[in-house]
Amino acid sequence: MELPIVTDTKPQVIDLEAGKVYVWCTCGLTEKGALCDGKHKGSGLKSLVFEVEESGTKYLCQCKKTKNAPYCDGSHNNL
Image (cartoon, rainbow, N blue to C red; front, side, top):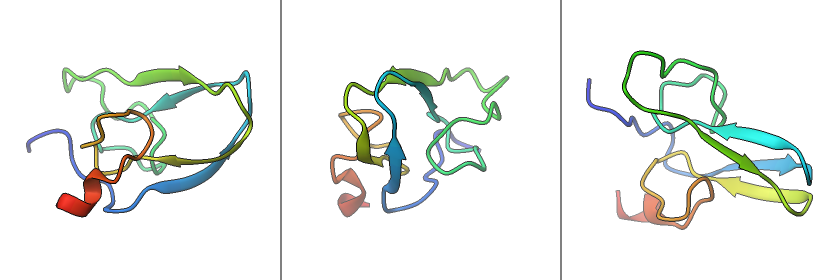
């Protein structure tokens, strides 16, 4: 299996809180949408830890092709 796996071809729309630390899935094996659940262990990939500066609705990439990780940049439109 080649990683990363496209989890979905649209972003996960999620409300995130300012000052809170989140972990974005980079491998696509997660069962938690765009957020990491640890399934990458042994894959050679590392999750992306990020902190949100401003609370609100965010669009997290699930295709793993974004150039603005963890946020969706529309790269899924080219799949």
